[in-house]
Length: 452
Length: 80
Image 1 (cartoon, chains in turn green, orange):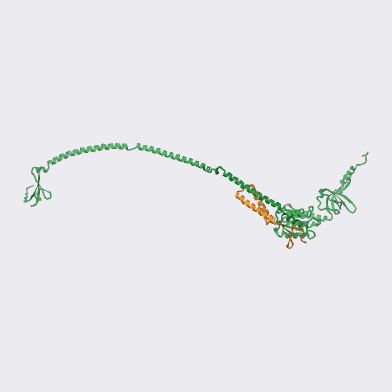
Image 2 (cartoon, chains in turn green, yellow; image 1 turned 180 degrees about the vertical axis):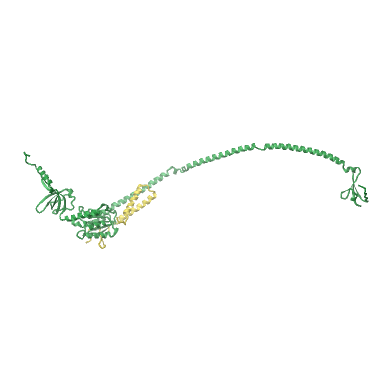
C-alpha cells in the first residue's frame, strides 16, 4: 500500500458495499414514495424509481418478489415498499432492493384483510376438505353478479356454447360499494332458500382495485359462501387479485368464462364420450356373443356331441360284463345242481328195490308152488278119502235095499212115510220100487202096538 | 353435495360400469344381453338429454322472485 495509495474502483465499490451491508439500519427499510419510471416488464425483474417532492431512489424488484405483489402498480401510484439498500458494483450505484410492495393508503385495509383471513383460516373455512366436487352435468346454475356487467354475458355465452342443457338463473347483486356485501349475501340467501334446485353457483365480478373488490372480502359474504348448499365457483377480479371469496369457494376461476367452463361439461366432448361408450358397448357385446358362439361350436364339435353313444359306452360295457357274469354264474349253478342231481340219481338207482323185488318174487314163486303142491296133495288125499267114503256110502245106500226087493212110501208131498200114523184112509201114496213107482190107495189101516 | 334431481351423472356412471363389465367378459349371456339393452337405452337417454336443449335458458331473478328472461347470446342485460 505504501508504494501505491490509490485504490482500484473495484476495491472502493467493494468497500462501500461492505459498508451498506454492515449497516444495521439498511437491512430492513420501510420506504414510502411515488412510483416513477414504472414500465411493466413481463416475466422479468422490475426496475423503477421511487420519489417524493425532493428526492428519488432507484429500485430493483426481483421477479420472485414482484410475483407476490397483489395489485397492479401504476405510474404515479403511492406505494409502501420494504427491502434493503445495496450497491450495484458494475454501475457503482446504490439502489433499493424491494422485497414487498403495497399500495399506500390501503395499509389499513390490507391489515384488516390479513387479520380476517387468518381468523377464518383458523376456523377452517378455507380447508381443502371442505371443498366440494363440482357437478359434471348441472341442470341449473345460479349466478351472483352484476346484471349489467360482462361477467353474466361471458358466463351465458360460454354455457350456451358448451352445454345448452344447463339453465342459468342470474341473481343480480351490487358488486361494488358499501351496500354490495349485503346485496351479495341477500342474493345468495335467496339461492340457498331454494334448496337443491341449483347444482352449482358462480359468484363473479370483473377486475378492479382492492377497494372495488372489497365486498368480496367481507366476512359475512365469505361465511355465506361457505354456508351455500351447493358447490361455489368464484371468479372475482383478475387472476392476480385473490379475495377471501376465492379462497372459500370450492373452485376458483380466473375469468367468468373459465368459471362457466368449470361449471359445464363440453357438450361435444361428452357426446363423443357417450358415442365412444356406445361403440365400446356394441363391440364388447359382439365379442361376448362371438365368444359364446365359439364355445358353443367347440362343444358341438366335441366327441361327445358328435358321437353321443360314447356317453354310455362304458355303461354298455358294464352291462355286458354283468350279463356275462350273470350268465356264467347261472350256468355254474345249473351245472352244479345237475351234477348233484345226477349223483343223487345214481345213488337212488343204486338203492333201487328191484333186487329185493326179484328176491321177493322168487320167494313168492317158491311159496306159490309149495302152496299149489300142498293143495294138490291135500286135494288128492281128500279125494281119495272121499272116494272111499262114497264107496262106503254107496255100500250103505237104501237103493241097494230096494234092489233086494224093499219099497219105500211117500205121500202126495213127497214126504217119506215111515209110520201108519202118518196115513189116512183113501189117501193116495206113492210106492217107490227099484225100477219105478206105483200109486196106491189106502183101504185099511191096522195099527199094531207091539211093533217098533 | 345436495341431492341430485337428475341422475345424468349416475346414468353415465352406470353406462361406464356396464361397458366395463361387458369388456371384462365373464358375464352370462342373458345378463350380458340385459346389460347391453340397458346400456343402449341409457346412452340414448343421455344423448337425448344432452342434445334436446338447443339453447341455454337464462333468467334474471329479482329479489322478490320475479323472473325475467335473458338472451344468452346478448351481452346487454337489462338495466338495473
